[in-house]
Length: 506
Image (cartoon, helix red, strand yellow):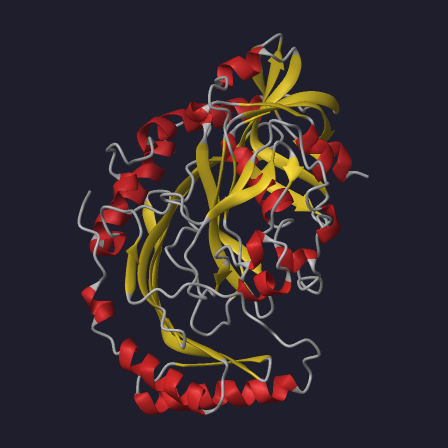
């Protein structure tokens, strides 16, 4: 493991003195709680197409925020001028906002008590900071990928991309907690595009985004098998272009983690955010069928279903040491043996519902920049494998008539996270336990509880993959967060399959 230390170009910034000035002023003005958050988030994106670099860009978001509780109401303000005078002004603005909000707040905000963490540091698990690798070297990798993909007869065009984020954050509050953190994440990928006699389609990498560094692309033990996938994709695309259209009906499904992660995200991850269940997201992104009265009574899925919320798993996109309210991150049950048992919480929700998580937050507060207030945000929500569970091949072998689903594509789910349909990159027919070729135009449709109750088996640890996304959206003003979802290959019985072409004509 390479050295993982806080970036000295961040630690040289004056965040400690700014935090002291802001918090002292908030206390003088009577805030019962105040926190100060200083962030520098660096983004770099490269794209290539058909053997040429198409674009490269670097951006940096640097600033600080003050959040206060005053007279039972929240106040928030942010700034970008790094002086003590500005820190004081921002604190005063936050208190002024809280005073206005207090006139409209019918239920005073309370925060769950949390331990104090005095000057702690945390750095995510990576070996090579991608920002220390030259743009020329990274561009050469992407260009090479597109050139190699285009050697396939079925490939007309090929594109590749690399998104990278280096995030530093300092947090301090009136209780004495101070945390300094750093995490790196990246999302590489490629896509091959081609046309058949009467159709156009594409085939993309199924490599997940990760909380790793440049080592993910170098071919070593920490790397994805990019060479193997690039070699396979042109032939997979050719097969897909020539494949017959699926016959609609009921099928057993064996779903690979590269597809199932997204179904978990939409039908479990968002559904078990407590703010959504309480209706706070109703105006923008909907509510949830998993309401408080369902906790510990709703049979969410079959007895083989065990789902955790986890902000500690190594290389997870939502993994961090401490959240944006100074809470040490945790792992907990959301579904245990198929029963709905837990929500994702922040400190105000922990105080509001002392029957949940012993009245504490489980570390799910996050803001995507210093310009935004922290909100309750998704942990890495993952379906656990069976300790001695079957391989993917064994799961396929249990199916007489079915489909094997690989890779994510499009999705649709209603505002209560209940009715959904998902497509995939590749659907293979299964006949008498054997894969018998791809079909096209397929989507699986179900309600959340019917789908998860139809899960007969989950694969073993060797089938488990940590997938995820960089672009989960939530809140008004909108915020974007990265989150991972691990899962094993899993077997579902009697799931409805739609023919998307036929449905498109209705």
